[in-house]
View 1 (cartoon, protein in one colour):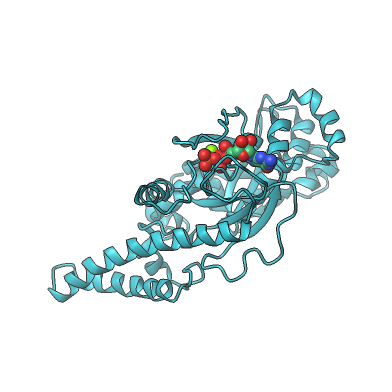
View 2 (cartoon, protein in one colour):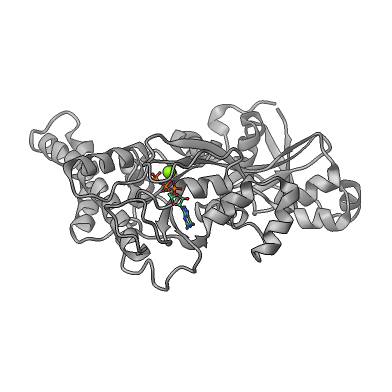
Length: 384
Ligand SMILES: Nc1nc2c(ncn2[C@@H]2O[C@H](COP(=O)(O)OP(=O)(O)OP(=O)(O)O)[C@@H](O)[C@H]2O)c(=O)[nH]1
Ligand SMILES: [Mg+2]
């Protein structure tokens, strides 16, 4: 059976929304920070193939890698099935050039260029230097994470403001001259004016409440202020209390990492890591926790499919339904969706196998609007 497209479940939802669909295919996370904050070192702490860090030489290219998530829950499922293929969840991470902190016109242009190159990312990790450094002579050697963070927030807000103001000025013209598009332009202008009001008061737009139509009207601008932001304090200490208070951009989470140590750990042969961790008193690599934190803070969740062929994690957004999960695996599964067989991964592990789980009657049949939970195992029954 093949349902006509008009009968697709939630047909006005994700199906109509190409932008969101792209996001679901792979979340793009950008590391953003002032030059020399340690972004590449953080990247090397989590990436499979480290890149070279050249001390004192500002980076000019962006490094991109898919970083796999270490997930003990999925690994336990892998150990149970011993599948031919194992596919953990991943994030596409961008290690961009840093923002030069100087005040010259060249520095300003460079900052604008770096920020423009990062607009397409889905979420940001702001990397703050929290270690002494003499390598960037125009900057103070002592760290000041709070000042750097305020600066990054201002840079992003200014960049958003300039885009909003430029577009608003065009729209005002169009409305005034009653062009063919004046009616829709007036609606777009009204949303932008709300954003501009916030910017002018030195406030962010992260918590500006917009209905879905208005949200769509401004989505194309890729405002930094509307995307998830996390803070990573890079250095040996803990983040200072109140680090994110009073900022113009809302930060989701604050975390710390001593990236140099974690980068060293990541570069080691896995067999040697235990000894190194013991020596430095590291319980678990910070990089593992960090990737998970970023994933969750960016609003992402995982569901699993299991079997002897493959044990795999699939990425959805918090609150997504079973039919969206099905579409993630294959659009045909969403189109032909009948029911989803669902059970929590820990019920499977406790039962010790699918047959035992079935015998216990712990496999539920859920409809298409079931909200999939993080760590659910989901197998789709489809009529296509
Ligand atoms: N002590 C200490 N040094 C670090 C740490 N992280 C990075 N560094 C050093 O700081 C310098 C800059 O590190 P990078 O990782 O290249 O910094 P970056 O932010 O990528 O620099 P750009 O890409 O040029 O903006 C290097 O010499 C690193 O070894 C850290 O946690 N502690
Ligand atoms: Mg770098």
